[in-house]
Picture 1 (cartoon, rainbow, N blue to C red):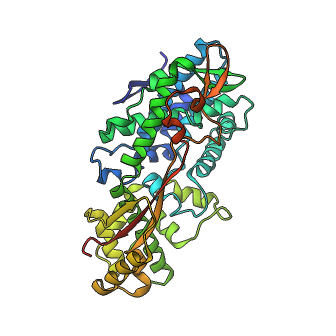
Picture 2 (tube, rainbow, N blue to C red; picture 1 turned 90 degrees about the vertical axis):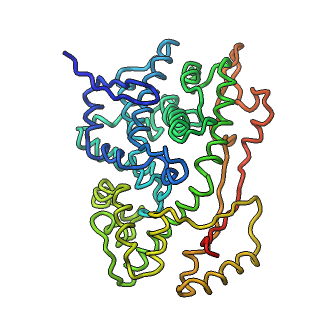
Picture 3 (cartoon, rainbow, N blue to C red; picture 1 turned 90 degrees about the horizontal axis):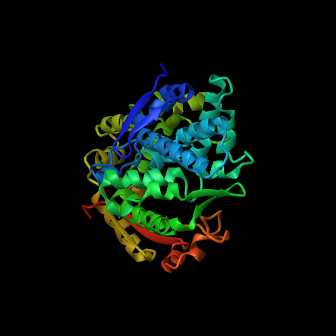
Amino acid sequence: MKKIEIFNDPIYGFVRLQNKLIFDIIEHPYFQRLRRISQMGLSYLVYPGAQHTRFHHVIGCGFLMEKAIYTLRLKDIEISKEEEEALYIAILLHDIGHGPFSHALEHSFIEDIDHEEISIFFMNDLNLQFDGKLSLAIQIFKDEYPRKFLHQLISSQLDVDRLDYLKRDSFYTGVAEGNINAERLITMLNVVNEDLVLEENGIYSVEKFLVARRLMYWQVYLHKTGVAAEQILVKVLQRARDLIENGENIEVDGSLKYFLSNKINTENFNKEALENFATLDDTDILFALKKWIQHSDFTLSYLSKSIINRNLPKIIIQNDNFSKEFLDDKLNAVSKHLPIDKEDISYFVFTGEVHNKAYNSVEKGIDILKKNGEIIDIVKASDQLNLQALTNSVTKYFICYPKEL
């Protein structure tokens, strides 16, 4: 009897795995760590239902990839068994390089390496462990394979990654604006000259997809409370690192201690760093925050309490930058009301920017295959005028400061 492994997914129902290699990869400790990595960072402080993990997401991506391969084969697009397996592996591992709380701490542990690059480090290591069986998956993931549409299924402006996370995040947050029709979009996929295209009948679904992406960013991913929480989390780790560098005694263990005590970057990211990163997850951060609440350093204790007790700072987001007078007023108020040194004020009052661009017209876009065979970009193909506006990057400015001010 052929063994079939089944996951029961709340979005798609039963997800079946009939490939031993893929199941063995999922069983690997590197992959199982994704069960302990929040998909949406600290968004659960805003949307209590957003408790899903990167593990949920990549399993869902695997399901959608299976649907996409099936659809393209029905349209006489040849995809070999080896390419099929490589696509499954690549999409399952595309997020394996995420650290604790996903994007919230993207560069807090490794200074100048994005999670995609760390994913490649993981893939290369797994490839050694699995006797080179991931070589084609890595080639496709890195866009080094001649058939470009295979990479585009994994990473493009209409890939299975985006199709899953919009639908999944919408489900778990309860924000209905993100509930896209992923099945119809996949059904409309096709390939022309080794490039992924969308058939003209799917144009309204892709219009909704782009609008949904914009709304989900403003309403969920860039929600002001979530932005404040993630900024404070970054500040906590920055404070802990500064104290360690100054010789202060901080209760911290294992992999978290390794990254707070060492500056890891592209030049020194090695096997030791990868193994430490592979054991680092959300629980390490939360456990540390609970211990640091009791620390004698006022700043570290205050910021840790802010996260654990959800006593987050006041945040204002607006279209224009804040005046120097307004910022100086908040800085002066903090220095008078909190028992901190002047050089530590930046932990309590700080500014920043958030950006939202639903569609990038400069990169490889979403191509629409018209019934006459013509291929044109979605913005030109659509009669919905606001799609052109979605190609513009919108920048907003924020300031955070303690609520007691």
